[in-house]
Image 1: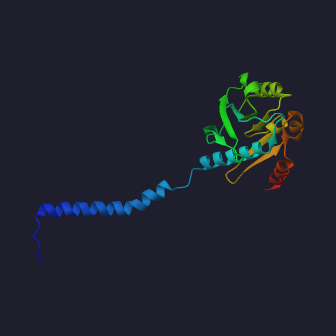
Image 2 (image 1 turned 180 degrees about the vertical axis):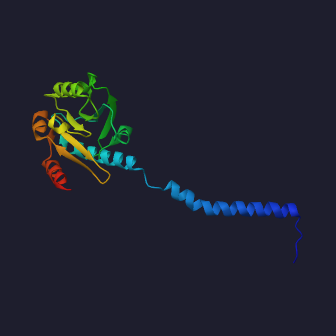
Image 3 (image 1 turned 135 degrees about the vertical axis):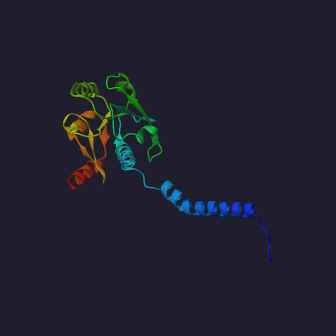
Length: 191
């Protein structure tokens, strides 16, 4: 059977065929782009969130808060995922908020403090204010463990590890499970 088709219909059919072919060929590419791996920065931020939540889950305060209040102080590199708010594996919600280093609310509204880049004066003042208070402090990097932070993160493309300042832990009033302390020793020893 022969069917007569006008040149305009033939051209429209070809365009539809080409468009459909192009769509079929580009669909896997579009899907591959949507499923592309996260950027290294996003991966590090998510890894930092997991480590911070892990540390917090093994800490005990003299009076356990119903909702853990984590304050982010100073400019940070890895808290993008953390500031979205989250829940610990135990189901306890973690309220995350950013505060300036000189905000007096740090002393009353924070159970834990995630510390970014602060100058020496801000850091000294913050740790002086936190002395004697049951506040768990986690520093994002550098050599803050010698200055007063309980935990210091070490972030690389391969892993997020941490160091513990045992002297600061002893003075903080926050109890840390011994397993976390052991884990920090093992991770620090790895190359």
